[in-house]
Image (tube, rainbow over all chains, first blue to last red; front, side, top):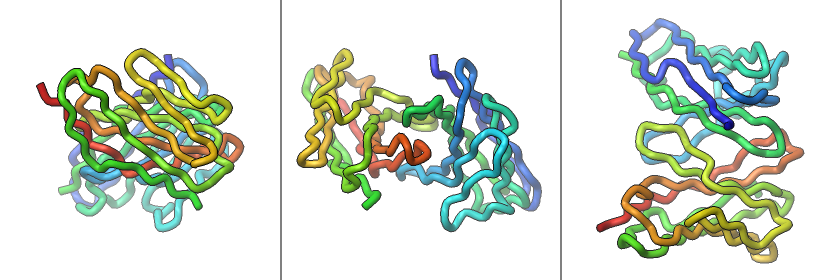
Length: 114
Length: 113
């Protein structure tokens, strides 16, 4: 149980284009979903928290107009990186929480902006 | 007050040995302490978690020891295997605080034959 999927697993895009990443909780309903960014050999950096049907809460320093988050249902959240630039290249990971503090992570999406 | 300090940064253990990773937290309101295992290019996987009402939790070869008064918790991996080689993250959260996890900096474990 507690499986979270992410799609795509890898994406290469050109600078200036937008990329959408999907995160789905497959066997549970997620009251909250989270989006993280991870640089090589570093810990996870929380970008934003989203609750179904409400606006995402962004961490300090994260541009909400650049990283658009939609949490359309209790099993689906999407992250759109708008007007991507090479510095946005990173490993993006979502997690989903059924509550009680637990978080289950997706497999991650490797974004490369050329 | 939200920090979680993790040590060591890296660890090399012989096959069959015990791997020990330590974490210390500052916020006494934290009430959920998970450990995650992450392989290169993959998302973190929940390994084991503990709440402060118990001092120890064991699942197979993995044990969490929790010391509430010292605000410390540790992960013990018994009979370490090469397949355990990964990065391990401790974390802490406040259940009523939106379930946000505060992560440690990670420990890169290598189990040698």
